[in-house]
Image (cartoon, rainbow, N blue to C red; front, side):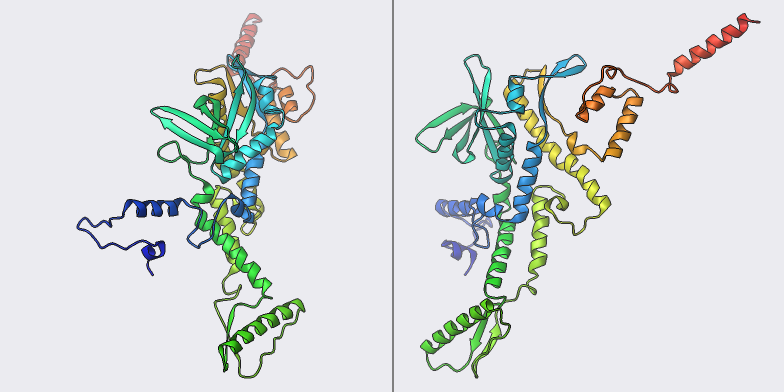
Length: 417
């Protein structure tokens, strides 16, 4: 049976152009198959089933939890310097986005949605004075995005009979990856459904294998007098296998004249362990994660594991943080704002051990890069009254000052002659 026969379609002959004509109904059937959650292996893949794969579960929780735990601040530009704001939108983003949800919980749910369904939406509630009061996350399944001309609108059904239409400026929209129309998006789970289905199938195979007492499927051949005898023999053998597994017995005695032939392959020959380990690498590729963050230390060493921490911050988290920052700045402050901005702090992710941090701080303070109180703030220590000045080592002075000192000494020698 060919591919078209499996779909219930009629296979057409070739035409002069080399194309295969497909009717509109058949074409939509092909499109729906490509966009459905059904994998090539016949396993339905969705958010719930994908999260049943440990590597996917670990990747989603690790990344969303890491971003949610980053400090999020609002700053105001003061010339070349900046000051941290408190209250208002700063308190909303840092503490609680509404009366029911903390900032951490909101950001965790936002990126949980991004890394599973592929997109998250948050409604910005403003009062009559255009002041932001709350942020409300929306269920992505109830949101439809529509673009008319250059204007984008969001229609949301709340699960009941209520339908709301929002303008783009009212929705914080963070997609995993947009399609060419810049309206619809790609889900990392549905896009990689065949890969994830392979992991699900491997888990199901292992469960069934051990449920059968570690006995692979087999066929029994022999002289049976009737179809009923074959059925009874099959039932008796199945019950015997299960009883042997329950009683932890290794041997199974067959009547004379019966012969067992294994079907398929056992877990060892199917390389089940190798396949499950490879599924971890596939999940790491989907989310651009070093495998060590999915608890796979197969190729990990002390040195390369430490370097993967830096790789994680530079090449994985950084782009998601920047995408969230720019979306928040655009939707909260507007395109023409140039005084206030929102920024995540990733200093905590880049913190080394105590000795390394102290050496870095020492270098920064001695070279007038940081003030002592700035260092103390990073270490959650109280400020010191004398710590708000830039310091420099006494042995290090500007070249001009040294030349001036030499000239002054020379003038003093001439005066004394």
